[in-house]
Length: 291
Image 1: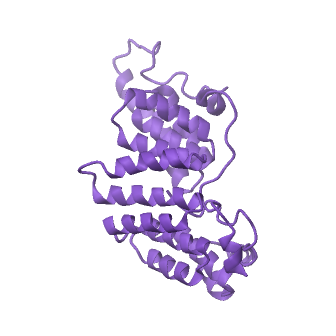
Image 2: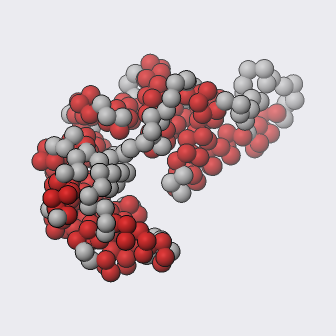
Image 3: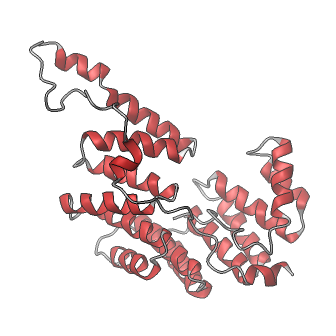
């Protein structure tokens, strides 16, 4: 029954979230916040004190915000990270890193319109920035504009001289677009190209496993997720994806052992119980695939 239920779950494994309402990214994220009103180096902040420059290097709030943003990302607190990067972006909207990191974290929390607005503005300032073009394509895919996003990623993947590890990441993201469209065979072919470029790409292996699960083949899904788990740089998400598939196959004990590696025992047990009963839900794979 689970295999048939999973087969009916079309395009539900990808990054999802509520699209933000109207208004600029600045007003939506940072209204009423004076954090960067008096940053060193901003207009109107000139000082006659010859020691001001050295003091600014120590006391510059941007140093704190950058650290806070990176810590929030490591903790997967993407809303906080978006706020920190957004404040930095507000101090210098031509800074490519600030724009890219703000947009990326906005995508993670489902604020696609704001992310797209920042990226399109920044691409006018940095028209040759391929990382920004890639992030825009991922934002389009996450917001449902699959054809447009996949076409952009394909063009980037075919760029002459593109490093193979980068090609692998791009091909994996293209596979996510196909899976979201319910075209699992095409998705699996794209993940295959990703793994040809980088056989140890844990994200591509994990996404391929999830794609097989969506197709109804839980045995092959488990096999690929186990391969992903032993690949370098395998993330916590890979382990949890494997736990989910094991629970769906009815192996609750093995699923719980995996879940306990990242979760307290009671939470792990509840999580596995949830996994065991999600076969007929339309949103079971939300946030499972990684771009």
